[in-house]
Amino acid sequence: MLLSGTAAIAFFGAGGTAYASGTNAGTIISNQANASYTVNGTPATVQSNTATFVVDRKVNLTVVADPNVNTIVNLGQTNAVMTFRVTNNTNGTQDFLLNANQNLGAGGTGTDNFDVTNVRVFVDSNNNGVYDAGVDTATFIDELLPDASAVVFIVSDVPTINGANYATVSLNATVAAGGAQGTQGAALIPTDLNLINQNADLDIVFADNDSDGLLGADIARNGQGRAYLEYEVGARAVNLSIVKTSTVLTDGVSTLNPKAIPGATVQYCLTVQNSTLLVPASNISLTDVIPANTTYVPGSIKVGGLGTGGVCLLNGFSVNDDGSPVPLSPYSGSFNATTKTVTAGIPTLLGGTSLAVSFQVLIN
Image (tube, rainbow, N blue to C red; front, side, top):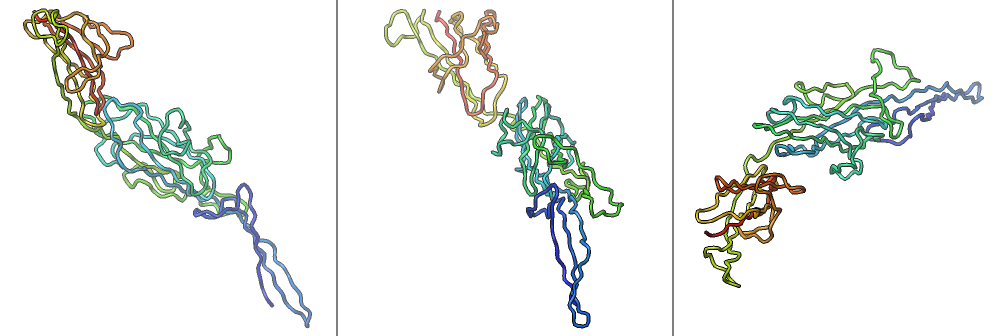
């Protein structure tokens, strides 16, 4: 008597593609046994019933910081971006729910001593690995195939807090039901492992590990994964320099090459330069007391011009001597007649840039 077997595989709710994460959940695997024998020289065969079972859903995922380096920020910065990668290690197409959490140091690399604000989570919709405001607007991962991954951004604002150094933020991803394009699925609920396996049922088995250790917020077998990054406040000082020059504009006598004689108009030019790349200087206030034997020319303060080496190549925005705002001008300025002080306000000077401030006096 010879025994042999035949097997058949069918699917419901899933394709038959093979993945590193294993046979697709919902795959129906069936098998029959055959026997051949002889009775008094007469051959015969007999076939068993078909034994069938459904491949269950083995839920697993990984969440990593990508790249795993701190995001360097400046105080007052808006829309600072962290980047993570979520990989679907489940044997089925899944949605993933995303949440950002601020955690006091657990899983981080520094000392968490402040919280960022306006924290948002977005999925990289055009797969370019760069956060594009207004383009990357999805807040959950939709229909992620087995073994595939998606880039996720955490976008936050940095408050202005003296002494702020590190803010630890974690991305928490939860495996959810797939199957409906464009619709956020519900978080998966595992099958009770105390129940006997039913061949016809598609069970849900959580197989994920603890992603952040004993001190972290994640635990094994919960259908979730977590990774941490930190916002790190960068440079506390910049290399800010000021170069001041004077140029005689007119003297009332000479047509060319005016001289510094009584009655001549002199323009002072102050070129402010921030030589520290990538780090802006904020709330810059310049003050200059006009020298003895000169008189300030009313309305001559200009801020935001183009200057180099202390020479004003192009004057900036005119400001009001009384300090009142000028429409559409980002700058401010004033002249105090009592102290004979010229003041110019520059909200922000980006790293590696310069601008000029100018004003005029008459020689008494």
